[in-house]
Image (cartoon, rainbow, N blue to C red; front, side):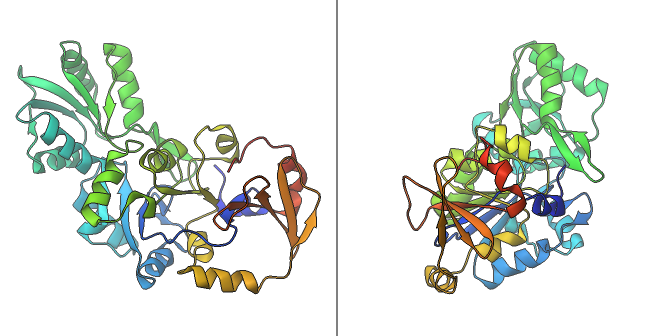
Length: 346
């Protein structure tokens, strides 16, 4: 795992706006690996939330972690020092409860999840069952998993039950570079044993963003999804037509980013960088740009025009420059490495 200091010192790319960023009205924030890791809050994460509040931006803690209910996250976030009300939390467990209520009304559902996950489903009117009337197996991030649960789930799946899962995450990041097997890993085992593939509800399924857009009245293109995973946090933004910021404080490494077909709109070392590079208005950004010294144009590497400003290199896509064009910054020590890199697409 690449921590924030290594990311900065090793000179990996960070993506910013060349002139100004879109005026993002609502931030959908991943938690594990983005704002904190285990019980360790990342430096500046709480200040970032308070900055959003101070600048009039809305935010929702959006997590694929279905091991806890929504109210559990409210209490946990408050305990860690984050501002949080129930309206600020939306989990894959909540989205799964909504989905089951709409698509399997009255159907017996066999849950593979924590007691909190089961309570969350029941709060949406889902009827849980372990009998002959089971028509759906629903899997979450189960930290109380037993072999008996797996046995029963395979039994129902092989007899025609539908397979619904809260989230596709393979692992849950933990401190000291450790991980826990997440919902996706549990589902892979069940698929191998039953031959049935799950339908995932959480990120990257765009429905979570669409539901929030409908609840808040904020259009998808004014929503920014922030997280540390390309295949969930960034993919859901791409699928929903929202903005996206990848933070390099969790699961994604520079190599993973370079090889991924899913590319974020912006890449930053950690969440505090977002408020430093996303001004409240276009005018504020314009004034900041006017204070910068004139650029010095140099020979472009690969299809990029590079310019040097105070010892830092910026790149603009040569074919389509515009005020909203995203830029890449390469630390001086990484110029040679970046010139030969095929990743970090815009």
